[in-house]
Amino acid sequence: MSTPTRQRPLLLRNKNFALVWIGQVLSQGGTRVYQIALLWWLLGQLPENVRGIASGAFLVMGALPPLLLMRHIGGLIDRVPSRRVMLRAELIACAVVTVLAVFAWQDAVPVWSVYVVALILAVCQAFFDPCLLKAMPELVEGKDVERAVGFGTSTQSVANFAGAAFGAVLLATVGFTGAVMINAASYAVAAVCLYFARFTPLPVSPPPPGEAPPQEHKSTWKFLGSMPSVRPLLVCFAAANFFSAPTLLVLPLYTKLVLEQEAGTLAILEAALWLGLLLGAFSAANIPTAGRTVRFGALCIAAFGVFLAIPGLVTNTVIYAVVLALAGLCLGVSNVKFTALFQVAVPNEVKGRFFAALQAAISSTFPVAFLAFGAFGDAIGPQLLTLAQGAGLLIFALVLARIPEPPT
Image 1 (cartoon, one colour):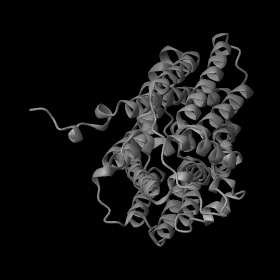
Image 2 (cartoon, rainbow, N blue to C red):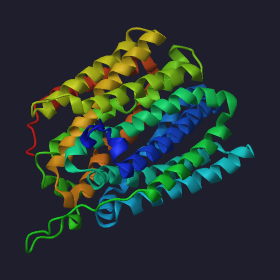
Image 3 (cartoon, helix red, strand yellow):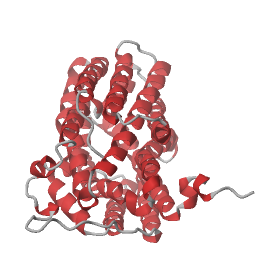
Protein backbone atom coordinates (compact mmCIF):
# COMPACT_ATOMS: atom_id res chain seq x y z
CA MET A 1 0.00 0.00 0.00
CA SER A 2 1.41 3.39 -0.97
CA THR A 3 1.99 6.04 1.65
CA PRO A 4 -0.58 8.89 1.54
CA THR A 5 0.85 12.09 0.12
CA ARG A 6 0.19 14.10 3.28
CA GLN A 7 2.23 11.64 5.35
CA ARG A 8 5.33 11.90 3.21
CA PRO A 9 8.10 14.19 4.54
CA LEU A 10 7.89 17.77 3.32
CA LEU A 11 11.23 17.58 1.51
CA LEU A 12 10.02 14.58 -0.52
CA ARG A 13 6.68 16.00 -1.58
CA ASN A 14 7.79 19.55 -2.36
CA LYS A 15 10.69 19.68 -4.82
CA ASN A 16 10.93 23.47 -4.89
CA PHE A 17 11.17 23.80 -1.12
CA ALA A 18 13.69 20.94 -1.01
CA LEU A 19 15.92 22.67 -3.57
CA VAL A 20 15.96 25.93 -1.62
CA TRP A 21 16.55 24.21 1.72
CA ILE A 22 19.32 21.87 0.54
CA GLY A 23 21.08 24.72 -1.27
CA GLN A 24 21.10 26.81 1.88
CA VAL A 25 22.38 23.98 4.06
CA LEU A 26 25.33 23.56 1.70
CA SER A 27 25.91 27.31 1.37
CA GLN A 28 25.78 28.10 5.07
CA GLY A 29 27.71 24.95 5.95
CA GLY A 30 30.56 26.13 3.74
CA THR A 31 30.33 29.58 5.32
CA ARG A 32 30.58 28.07 8.80
CA VAL A 33 33.69 26.09 7.87
CA TYR A 34 35.18 29.34 6.58
CA GLN A 35 34.21 31.28 9.72
CA ILE A 36 35.68 28.69 12.07
CA ALA A 37 38.91 28.66 10.06
CA LEU A 38 39.02 32.44 9.94
CA LEU A 39 38.35 33.04 13.64
CA TRP A 40 41.00 30.50 14.55
CA TRP A 41 43.38 32.11 12.06
CA LEU A 42 42.73 35.55 13.59
CA LEU A 43 43.41 34.25 17.09
CA GLY A 44 46.77 33.00 15.84
CA GLN A 45 47.65 36.22 13.98
CA LEU A 46 46.80 38.81 16.62
CA PRO A 47 48.47 39.75 19.93
CA GLU A 48 46.89 38.05 22.94
CA ASN A 49 45.71 41.29 24.56
CA VAL A 50 43.47 42.23 21.59
CA ARG A 51 42.14 38.84 20.53
CA GLY A 52 38.73 39.36 22.09
CA ILE A 53 38.12 42.85 20.74
CA ALA A 54 39.43 41.92 17.27
CA SER A 55 37.21 38.83 17.09
CA GLY A 56 34.28 40.93 18.27
CA ALA A 57 34.98 43.51 15.57
CA PHE A 58 34.94 40.73 12.96
CA LEU A 59 31.50 39.59 14.15
CA VAL A 60 30.29 43.21 14.15
CA MET A 61 30.77 43.24 10.36
CA GLY A 62 27.97 40.71 10.10
CA ALA A 63 25.63 42.69 12.34
CA LEU A 64 25.81 46.14 10.71
CA PRO A 65 24.09 45.61 7.31
CA PRO A 66 20.68 44.53 8.68
CA LEU A 67 20.65 47.70 10.79
CA LEU A 68 21.95 50.18 8.24
CA LEU A 69 19.95 48.85 5.28
CA MET A 70 16.75 47.79 7.02
CA ARG A 71 14.34 50.18 5.27
CA HIS A 72 15.83 49.48 1.83
CA ILE A 73 15.87 45.72 2.40
CA GLY A 74 12.23 45.54 3.44
CA GLY A 75 10.96 47.69 0.58
CA LEU A 76 12.99 45.81 -2.01
CA ILE A 77 11.97 42.30 -1.00
CA ASP A 78 8.31 43.37 -0.89
CA ARG A 79 8.58 44.61 -4.51
CA VAL A 80 11.05 42.22 -6.16
CA PRO A 81 10.35 38.48 -6.64
CA SER A 82 11.88 36.42 -3.84
CA ARG A 83 13.80 34.07 -6.13
CA ARG A 84 15.54 36.99 -7.88
CA VAL A 85 16.65 38.62 -4.64
CA MET A 86 18.00 35.38 -3.19
CA LEU A 87 19.73 34.27 -6.39
CA ARG A 88 21.55 37.58 -6.82
CA ALA A 89 22.69 37.52 -3.19
CA GLU A 90 24.19 34.06 -3.66
CA LEU A 91 25.95 34.99 -6.90
CA ILE A 92 27.54 38.11 -5.39
CA ALA A 93 28.70 36.17 -2.34
CA CYS A 94 30.16 33.46 -4.58
CA ALA A 95 32.11 36.02 -6.61
CA VAL A 96 33.56 37.76 -3.54
CA VAL A 97 34.64 34.56 -1.82
CA THR A 98 36.15 33.26 -5.06
CA VAL A 99 38.37 36.36 -5.23
CA LEU A 100 39.40 35.80 -1.59
CA ALA A 101 40.21 32.17 -2.42
CA VAL A 102 42.60 33.30 -5.14
CA PHE A 103 44.50 35.52 -2.70
CA ALA A 104 44.47 32.76 -0.07
CA TRP A 105 45.93 30.34 -2.62
CA GLN A 106 48.82 32.79 -3.06
CA ASP A 107 49.16 33.20 0.73
CA ALA A 108 48.58 36.94 0.30
CA VAL A 109 45.52 37.64 2.48
CA PRO A 110 46.03 40.74 4.69
CA VAL A 111 44.13 40.77 7.98
CA TRP A 112 42.10 43.87 7.05
CA SER A 113 40.69 42.21 3.91
CA VAL A 114 38.77 39.55 5.81
CA TYR A 115 36.79 42.31 7.53
CA VAL A 116 35.83 43.77 4.15
CA VAL A 117 34.77 40.37 2.84
CA ALA A 118 32.77 39.76 6.02
CA LEU A 119 30.93 43.04 5.47
CA ILE A 120 30.03 42.22 1.85
CA LEU A 121 28.85 38.72 2.76
CA ALA A 122 26.77 40.20 5.58
CA VAL A 123 25.06 42.55 3.12
CA CYS A 124 24.14 39.58 0.94
CA GLN A 125 22.87 37.68 3.98
CA ALA A 126 20.90 40.72 5.16
CA PHE A 127 18.85 40.58 1.96
CA PHE A 128 18.67 36.81 1.81
CA ASP A 129 17.49 35.88 5.32
CA PRO A 130 14.27 37.96 5.55
CA CYS A 131 13.51 37.13 1.93
CA LEU A 132 13.72 33.42 2.74
CA LEU A 133 11.28 33.86 5.64
CA LYS A 134 8.94 35.88 3.43
CA ALA A 135 9.14 33.18 0.73
CA MET A 136 8.08 30.25 2.93
CA PRO A 137 4.37 30.57 2.01
CA GLU A 138 5.46 30.91 -1.65
CA LEU A 139 7.02 27.45 -1.52
CA VAL A 140 4.55 25.46 0.61
CA GLU A 141 0.81 25.28 1.28
CA GLY A 142 -0.63 27.12 4.28
CA LYS A 143 -1.00 24.00 6.42
CA ASP A 144 2.68 23.21 5.91
CA VAL A 145 3.96 26.67 6.88
CA GLU A 146 4.95 25.84 10.47
CA ARG A 147 6.77 22.69 9.36
CA ALA A 148 8.47 24.69 6.59
CA VAL A 149 9.45 27.35 9.12
CA GLY A 150 10.97 24.56 11.20
CA PHE A 151 13.03 23.46 8.22
CA GLY A 152 13.87 27.06 7.31
CA THR A 153 15.07 28.03 10.77
CA SER A 154 16.94 24.73 10.97
CA THR A 155 18.91 25.59 7.82
CA GLN A 156 21.51 27.48 9.79
CA SER A 157 21.52 24.82 12.50
CA VAL A 158 22.11 21.98 10.03
CA ALA A 159 24.75 24.02 8.22
CA ASN A 160 26.55 25.03 11.38
CA PHE A 161 26.41 21.52 12.82
CA ALA A 162 27.94 20.07 9.65
CA GLY A 163 30.39 22.96 9.30
CA ALA A 164 31.54 22.68 12.91
CA ALA A 165 31.75 18.89 12.78
CA PHE A 166 33.98 18.94 9.70
CA GLY A 167 35.69 22.26 10.37
CA ALA A 168 38.54 20.89 12.46
CA VAL A 169 39.18 18.04 10.02
CA LEU A 170 39.30 20.44 7.10
CA LEU A 171 41.57 22.84 9.00
CA ALA A 172 44.03 20.00 9.54
CA THR A 173 43.87 18.84 5.91
CA VAL A 174 43.14 21.75 3.57
CA GLY A 175 43.76 24.71 5.90
CA PHE A 176 42.37 28.22 5.59
CA THR A 177 42.79 28.26 1.80
CA GLY A 178 40.77 25.08 1.36
CA ALA A 179 38.04 26.36 3.67
CA VAL A 180 37.63 29.51 1.55
CA MET A 181 37.47 27.43 -1.65
CA ILE A 182 34.83 25.15 -0.15
CA ASN A 183 32.77 28.19 0.82
CA ALA A 184 32.94 29.59 -2.73
CA ALA A 185 31.84 26.24 -4.16
CA SER A 186 28.95 26.00 -1.68
CA TYR A 187 27.62 29.41 -2.74
CA ALA A 188 27.72 28.25 -6.37
CA VAL A 189 25.73 25.10 -5.54
CA ALA A 190 23.14 27.12 -3.63
CA ALA A 191 22.74 29.45 -6.62
CA VAL A 192 22.12 26.47 -8.92
CA CYS A 193 19.46 25.13 -6.54
CA LEU A 194 17.71 28.50 -6.46
CA TYR A 195 17.84 28.78 -10.24
CA PHE A 196 15.82 25.57 -10.65
CA ALA A 197 13.36 26.25 -7.80
CA ARG A 198 9.97 27.77 -8.58
CA PHE A 199 8.10 30.20 -6.31
CA THR A 200 4.36 31.03 -6.24
CA PRO A 201 3.90 34.77 -5.44
CA LEU A 202 1.66 35.56 -2.47
CA PRO A 203 -1.68 37.34 -3.03
CA VAL A 204 -1.69 40.81 -1.50
CA SER A 205 -4.50 43.12 -0.48
CA PRO A 206 -4.51 46.71 -1.80
CA PRO A 207 -4.45 49.46 0.84
CA PRO A 208 -7.73 51.17 1.72
CA PRO A 209 -8.58 54.26 -0.40
CA GLY A 210 -6.49 57.26 0.60
CA GLU A 211 -4.02 55.22 2.63
CA ALA A 212 -0.38 54.91 1.54
CA PRO A 213 0.97 51.45 0.80
CA PRO A 214 2.90 49.98 3.75
CA GLN A 215 6.26 50.19 1.98
CA GLU A 216 5.90 53.96 1.73
CA HIS A 217 6.19 54.46 5.48
CA LYS A 218 9.41 56.34 6.09
CA SER A 219 9.86 55.34 9.71
CA THR A 220 10.36 51.68 10.50
CA TRP A 221 9.33 52.35 14.08
CA LYS A 222 6.12 53.91 12.77
CA PHE A 223 5.60 50.89 10.54
CA LEU A 224 5.99 48.56 13.51
CA GLY A 225 3.66 50.82 15.46
CA SER A 226 0.91 49.74 13.07
CA MET A 227 1.33 46.28 14.65
CA PRO A 228 1.34 47.13 18.38
CA SER A 229 0.92 43.50 19.37
CA VAL A 230 4.25 42.42 17.86
CA ARG A 231 6.44 45.50 18.42
CA PRO A 232 7.08 44.72 22.14
CA LEU A 233 8.24 41.24 21.13
CA LEU A 234 10.83 42.68 18.75
CA VAL A 235 12.11 45.07 21.42
CA CYS A 236 12.45 42.20 23.88
CA PHE A 237 14.25 40.02 21.32
CA ALA A 238 16.74 42.81 20.64
CA ALA A 239 17.51 43.17 24.34
CA ALA A 240 17.82 39.42 24.90
CA ASN A 241 20.14 39.03 21.92
CA PHE A 242 22.62 41.38 23.57
CA PHE A 243 23.36 38.43 25.87
CA SER A 244 22.77 35.47 23.57
CA ALA A 245 24.59 36.52 20.37
CA PRO A 246 28.08 36.75 21.96
CA THR A 247 28.01 32.96 22.42
CA LEU A 248 29.76 32.74 19.04
CA LEU A 249 32.50 34.97 20.46
CA VAL A 250 32.70 33.31 23.88
CA LEU A 251 33.13 29.79 22.47
CA PRO A 252 36.59 30.26 20.85
CA LEU A 253 37.80 32.38 23.78
CA TYR A 254 36.60 29.80 26.33
CA THR A 255 38.15 26.95 24.33
CA LYS A 256 41.54 28.59 24.01
CA LEU A 257 41.86 30.39 27.36
CA VAL A 258 39.86 28.28 29.84
CA LEU A 259 39.89 24.74 28.44
CA GLU A 260 43.30 25.34 26.80
CA GLN A 261 42.27 23.16 23.86
CA GLU A 262 42.73 23.38 20.11
CA ALA A 263 40.39 23.84 17.14
CA GLY A 264 39.12 20.25 17.38
CA THR A 265 37.50 20.98 20.74
CA LEU A 266 36.01 24.20 19.41
CA ALA A 267 34.47 22.23 16.55
CA ILE A 268 32.91 19.76 19.01
CA LEU A 269 31.42 22.56 21.11
CA GLU A 270 30.11 24.37 18.03
CA ALA A 271 28.61 21.12 16.76
CA ALA A 272 26.88 20.49 20.10
CA LEU A 273 25.23 23.92 20.07
CA TRP A 274 24.04 23.61 16.49
CA LEU A 275 22.90 20.01 16.94
CA GLY A 276 20.67 21.23 19.76
CA LEU A 277 19.30 24.01 17.55
CA LEU A 278 18.66 21.49 14.80
CA LEU A 279 16.77 19.10 17.08
CA GLY A 280 14.76 21.99 18.50
CA ALA A 281 13.82 23.29 15.06
CA PHE A 282 12.65 19.90 13.83
CA SER A 283 10.74 18.99 16.99
CA ALA A 284 9.01 22.35 17.50
CA ALA A 285 6.03 21.57 15.22
CA ASN A 286 5.18 18.57 17.43
CA ILE A 287 5.15 20.57 20.68
CA PRO A 288 1.73 22.11 21.47
CA THR A 289 1.61 25.53 23.11
CA ALA A 290 -2.17 25.78 23.61
CA GLY A 291 -2.24 29.28 22.11
CA ARG A 292 0.35 30.59 24.60
CA THR A 293 3.36 30.92 22.34
CA VAL A 294 4.83 33.97 24.07
CA ARG A 295 4.75 32.40 27.54
CA PHE A 296 6.18 29.15 26.19
CA GLY A 297 8.94 31.02 24.34
CA ALA A 298 9.84 32.91 27.52
CA LEU A 299 10.27 29.61 29.34
CA CYS A 300 12.56 28.34 26.56
CA ILE A 301 14.72 31.49 26.72
CA ALA A 302 15.00 31.20 30.52
CA ALA A 303 16.22 27.62 30.18
CA PHE A 304 18.61 28.73 27.44
CA GLY A 305 20.14 31.26 29.83
CA VAL A 306 20.54 28.72 32.63
CA PHE A 307 22.36 26.28 30.36
CA LEU A 308 24.69 28.99 29.03
CA ALA A 309 25.66 29.97 32.59
CA ILE A 310 26.68 26.49 33.78
CA PRO A 311 30.20 26.58 32.20
CA GLY A 312 30.89 29.70 34.27
CA LEU A 313 30.65 27.51 37.37
CA VAL A 314 31.94 24.16 36.09
CA THR A 315 35.00 23.82 33.83
CA ASN A 316 34.63 20.58 31.92
CA THR A 317 34.61 19.99 28.17
CA VAL A 318 31.99 17.21 28.22
CA ILE A 319 29.63 19.17 30.48
CA TYR A 320 30.07 22.24 28.29
CA ALA A 321 29.15 20.25 25.17
CA VAL A 322 26.05 18.78 26.84
CA VAL A 323 24.71 22.10 28.17
CA LEU A 324 25.37 23.77 24.81
CA ALA A 325 23.26 21.09 23.11
CA LEU A 326 20.45 21.63 25.63
CA ALA A 327 20.71 25.41 25.23
CA GLY A 328 20.48 25.02 21.46
CA LEU A 329 17.43 22.77 21.80
CA CYS A 330 15.57 25.41 23.83
CA LEU A 331 16.51 28.20 21.43
CA GLY A 332 15.62 26.16 18.34
CA VAL A 333 12.10 25.42 19.60
CA SER A 334 11.56 29.06 20.59
CA ASN A 335 12.74 30.36 17.19
CA VAL A 336 10.31 28.17 15.25
CA LYS A 337 7.34 28.95 17.47
CA PHE A 338 7.81 32.72 17.25
CA THR A 339 8.50 32.71 13.49
CA ALA A 340 5.39 30.61 12.83
CA LEU A 341 3.38 33.01 15.01
CA PHE A 342 4.58 35.97 12.92
CA GLN A 343 3.75 34.18 9.65
CA VAL A 344 0.12 34.05 10.81
CA ALA A 345 -0.09 37.45 12.52
CA VAL A 346 1.56 39.59 9.80
CA PRO A 347 -0.32 40.38 6.52
CA ASN A 348 1.22 39.07 3.27
CA GLU A 349 1.66 42.52 1.76
CA VAL A 350 4.08 43.62 4.50
CA LYS A 351 5.83 40.34 5.25
CA GLY A 352 9.02 41.46 3.50
CA ARG A 353 9.23 44.66 5.50
CA PHE A 354 8.31 42.95 8.71
CA PHE A 355 10.95 40.23 8.45
CA ALA A 356 13.55 42.83 7.51
CA ALA A 357 12.52 44.75 10.63
CA LEU A 358 12.64 41.54 12.63
CA GLN A 359 16.15 40.80 11.42
CA ALA A 360 17.24 44.35 12.24
CA ALA A 361 15.59 44.22 15.66
CA ILE A 362 17.29 41.00 16.71
CA SER A 363 20.59 42.29 15.28
CA SER A 364 20.35 45.82 16.67
CA THR A 365 22.37 45.06 19.79
CA PHE A 366 24.92 42.81 18.05
CA PRO A 367 27.60 45.47 17.38
CA VAL A 368 27.64 46.73 20.97
CA ALA A 369 27.34 43.20 22.34
CA PHE A 370 30.22 41.78 20.31
CA LEU A 371 32.53 44.68 21.09
CA ALA A 372 31.53 44.83 24.75
CA PHE A 373 31.84 41.09 25.36
CA GLY A 374 35.08 41.00 23.37
CA ALA A 375 36.59 43.77 25.50
CA PHE A 376 35.27 42.23 28.73
CA GLY A 377 36.64 38.87 27.65
CA ASP A 378 40.13 40.39 27.46
CA ALA A 379 39.66 41.94 30.92
CA ILE A 380 37.66 39.47 33.05
CA GLY A 381 37.83 36.16 31.19
CA PRO A 382 35.28 33.95 29.39
CA GLN A 383 33.87 32.24 32.51
CA LEU A 384 32.43 35.45 33.92
CA LEU A 385 31.05 36.22 30.45
CA THR A 386 28.96 33.03 30.51
CA LEU A 387 27.52 33.99 33.91
CA ALA A 388 26.66 37.47 32.61
CA GLN A 389 24.92 35.89 29.59
CA GLY A 390 22.80 33.64 31.77
CA ALA A 391 21.75 36.40 34.17
CA GLY A 392 20.79 38.75 31.34
CA LEU A 393 18.70 36.13 29.54
CA LEU A 394 16.81 35.22 32.72
CA ILE A 395 15.86 38.87 33.25
CA PHE A 396 14.51 39.30 29.74
CA ALA A 397 12.69 35.97 29.85
CA LEU A 398 10.71 37.36 32.79
CA VAL A 399 9.90 40.51 30.81
CA LEU A 400 8.88 38.49 27.74
CA ALA A 401 6.53 36.33 29.82
CA ARG A 402 4.47 39.43 30.66
CA ILE A 403 3.85 40.45 27.02
CA PRO A 404 0.35 39.52 25.77
CA GLU A 405 -0.18 37.18 22.83
CA PRO A 406 -0.63 38.93 19.45
CA PRO A 407 -3.93 38.21 17.66
CA THR A 408 -3.76 35.65 14.84
